[in-house]
Length: 160
Image 1: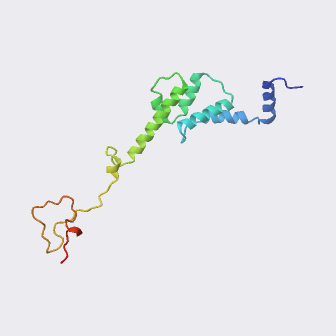
Image 2 (image 1 turned 90 degrees about the vertical axis):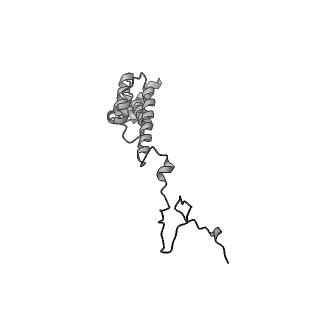
Image 3 (image 1 turned 60 degrees about the vertical axis):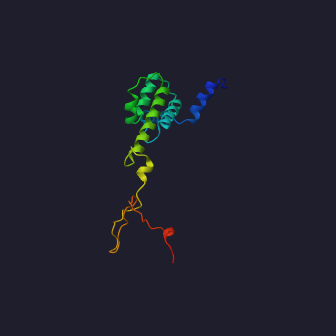
C-alpha cells in the first residue's frame, strides 16, 4: 500500500530502522540524567535533546522539576529558593549561580583573597642586611637606610 502522509512515512521508517530498545534506553538516560561535571548549559542541552528524541511531552512543572532535580546540589539549593514560572528563567539563574560558585572557588585558592593579586604573589627578593658585615665596617652617620640595599654605587666610586 502506498504511503500518503508524512506522518505515515515517519512511522514506517521508525519501525524499519529504529531498534526496539532505542526508546527504552532514551527513557533510562532521561531518568538518570544529572548535571555531574558538565556545565549547567550542557546539562540543559542534553535534557532538551533527550526529551525531544524520546518524544516526551510533559507539563511545564514536570520539566522544571526534572531539570532542578538533576542540577548539582549546591546550585539546586540556591535556585530552589526563588520562584520562577518558566524553565528559561531557572536556567538563567542556575547559570549565574554556577558562575558565582566558580568565582568563589578561584578566589579561595589564593592565600589572602582580600589583597590584590599582585600583592599576594610578590615575594621579597631582598633579605635584610645586618649593619655589621665585616669587623671593620662602620655605618654612615646621619643617613637612614630604608631599603636595606647597599648605599655604595659604582657611579659614586672615584678612580685615582
